[in-house]
Length: 382
Image 1: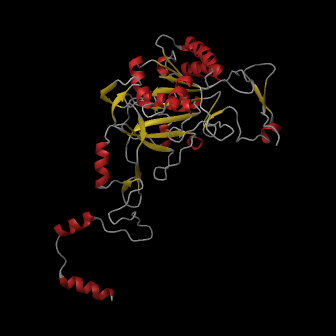
Image 2: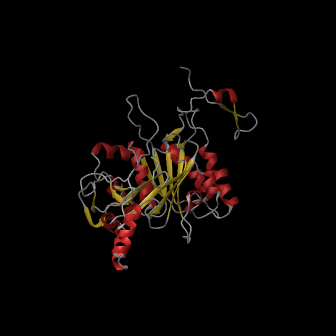
């Protein structure tokens, strides 16, 4: 088999321009890309993504958990590192996190929550592959230069920046300001080639806030732009990931049993939706909502324990976990893998739909049909 030859080469006149060679592009094996970092080229070296969510939802803990899982080679809600070793095992990534909204104690609480059930080997791998920086003073070009230096020094494959607003140095509602930061500054360091001349340098994920809530729900297209700032942010990003408070979709129904469970999860249940390049992420498309999404929840496990044995009993674990709710379009929402009262999964396919209970109640309250009319109807049918 011939080696996979890149179909591009640098322009001789401009180092920020590459020439795509059509012949090589036509013969390229697109399933094998050394610049791919996550999923099926979901995130690549030289590109960036956005994690969008409302204030207080837990974006920072989500991003840090995402980073931790990549650093030890764990799948994160179905998103996996692209590279495998010769035995087929996932290769961990070197990850850098820079954030400005949490102090060292809050970062420690999240880390202790994430690694609570990990073994010593996994914790050592986490310590080796994850770098965390708390920074409050750099913005714009100064931040870009610092990030470029740190990525090179730490040899990071992926960097998480939380939040975008702390470091962009401009008005994110203005296209020009966003373009200058994202395309002139960030893209310059993203697309610079690393020590391996065949690879771009690293991939980047920004954490960003949603705008003020509107009066109507967002559809698939407008959800892409459900964030504070210019549409240029979405245009720049390779992927867009939205964290939203749970809301029933059009084809999702709830019975009494599941209604009680939803009440217990109130405030802790969220939907994670990938509104751009979801098909490359590793997510399965939700057949009910038609979106690349999963349900997730805040953990309700009490107490955070450090490796030194200290226990903070006053806090729930700051940890995101999958939610085991599933939706039955034909009948009602049921627990994943759960059965109906008669021990069999409910299904109404190919059968006439039963009359709803409400209709019986209304019939009792209404006038009774007289026997003569009923008999006449019966004779007519005969």
